[in-house]
Image (tube, rainbow, N blue to C red):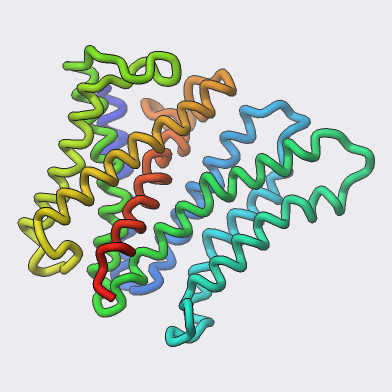
Length: 289
């Protein structure tokens, strides 16, 4: 537990420092794009390492597909901000290109090889499960064009709330967990841990609204802040369980052993993948037209 706490604090400090630098650079926050891209690439390579050798796509293809999707929002400066759809158009096009790249790569090198379908499926999954959610999360600041600081804060909350929920669920489940909710998929997940995680995630949003709500206008009311915290926390828990499904099916405890106490990069970002997507949906629905 001590290793987990120390490394968690170090990662949080490093992330905060990177965000501070990106604040000085301003939209579209290129350092965060590079960070998200690196995390997604390592996460996809971790899944690749768990697959049988014949089903592993070439690392270059993973690099290309995720690069196309994650780094596409940086092209926002090449697109008129007044253009219909804004950066959503190049993002949609880059997604289509990334999905087709798996087919094109297999077509180019196909010489009566087998397992083309599993390799294509893995690339498609890497794009849709890992790459697209991060690319969508990076669109959150665009919903706050009048206040880049508010947009960055919204993105940070989209990442922080799922991780806060992780922390709350871990400690609550460790000390008070009794009622298992997924005994086969993830035996350590308990109803008590679930409740503690959601409570901490919602509390983070409530504290944000209380202290910074009047400065960074993200939530119009405290009710909106609490609703965001609850839904994004639940999304984070489901994202964690989604990765548990993959690991269980691949007979692995962790995605890798890269980070002591945590496992792999994918074990760190799994809750963010769905949690941040839920956050984007919340802001799309609740933001004023």
